[in-house]
Length: 172
Image (cartoon, rainbow, N blue to C red):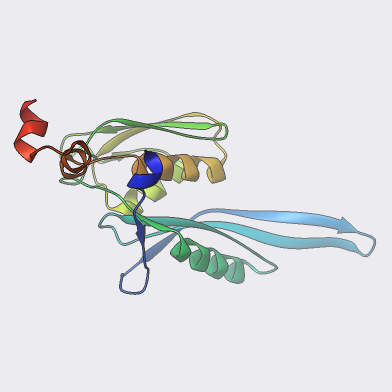
């Protein structure tokens, strides 16, 4: 069911903003000494329901970030956003990371930490309550958050899936 709900988006005609979630320096010890490389986790979004994440690795920071942005643009997904919040509560899980998202009233703000905050703000969500349980590894938290967001369904999607009219979704 979740696979049918994922809506891939092309990055060509979107104004995407990028956010660096985490930058990690990796050291490889060789006979000639230590070799440093950088890995960057980047989230891109148009702040209007489209988000993607990417990982870039390179010997220099700027190059790693640029590679991460390119990777993020390749896997964009569409997320339903209703009046600055999400349509319903949703759990997300990826590897050891578990997250919980709940809709919030207007004016609440994004109550979320680190990696989750970057994803939620890139989507364009302004009011949400979020909790990260389990692993705090930014790779897995970002993937769990995007997994939870792609499993969200708005009323139109529910009515289409059930084959009923919109009024019946709310009344019935």
